[in-house]
Length: 92
Image 1 (cartoon, rainbow, N blue to C red):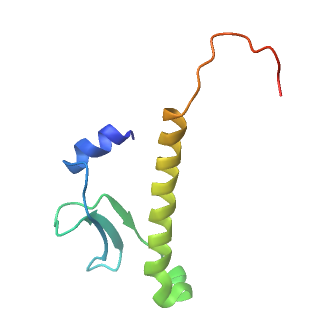
Image 2 (cartoon, rainbow, N blue to C red; image 1 turned 45 degrees about the vertical axis):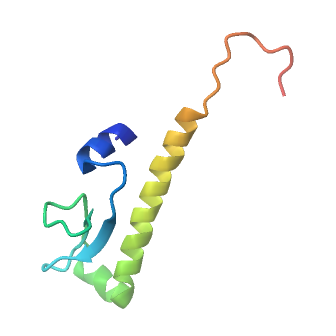
């Protein structure tokens, strides 16, 4: 998903996101204050929830942060790509 597609989905360039626990125990990433369908839903099975205990929210937050970082890095690589039309004199 491109930045433009994400902006269209969220409606603005700047949106505050929140990670909330839903009634069924799943964690959801959504626009702050929104009751609409979440952008991301993270659900751990019972065994993993027992293993993580109170850390499930922190793990979900780290998963979301890693995904956002990955998208940002991918976009930056596209923006900073150098196109060379000429053969370089020396290769390093």
